[in-house]
Image (tube, rainbow, N blue to C red; front, side):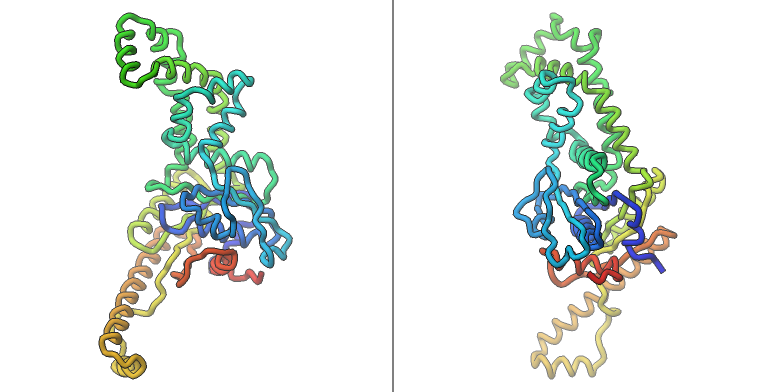
Length: 370
């Protein structure tokens, strides 16, 4: 028998909910955070959620880049606290610049640069990396018993695993070296041949793009070692013994395949996988038309043969889905020996408040009596 999720989280200080988009990671992360706060822990849940569903479910008007406390009411009788934040990648990037700038002049030089302003919110991997940066920052502050990260929505659930390495590759990349090395491309900016290209670019872009690029890379040069060291520490946090991953999926074929693939990649990287959560499982009985007596009973109850036919067709369809789900979940279990797999049935209502999150959490932690 698999342990309950709270036993899996015992002694951990970081829980990372990972999986493909649209499988319920945000709900799972919020439910885990609410349940663990009800057990007396000080918990922070971090998310990137453009739809702001997390803020809605926690009863908040909005979330920002700084954690705000959530009033638990009767759900806080265990003495714990729940805090929540919605990551602002641009603001977090600015904070990283603040942290590594050698002085105020160097800091402002980067923040005011036009190229930095454009790429700080759009750099490939910045959203995933900044999520890890925020997680690392809060972990370093050591103000919470448990941090729960709802990983960024992405078609590739592995993006956040590679984000620290991609940032390191960027700051050590050829483009950076070309601009900051005296013998590189920067030294040729004033060259006669390049001046023609530069003039064309100025006409096309309406500004001195080359000068902006050179200034950006030059300003960033003093921050490179800080970025590199921090990225390595952020990457190390993923494999720390205090960290555990929850792979979240739905029971459909493609998400199940992605969950299995992610489980394998976590194993390859020696990242600690605590459990897998399958959301929205159909629990209707096996498909097929009910016995004739049931059909007659429905006809007597509904009094409309057409409506009876629709009800029976819907029953059959859900039965097909239930069989599909069972087959896919068993395949997931077979491919994940030794990993607890929790099933959450499809719920009739959308989760939009703390009561709904606690009800969801009880399906993962049934011993919760709060």
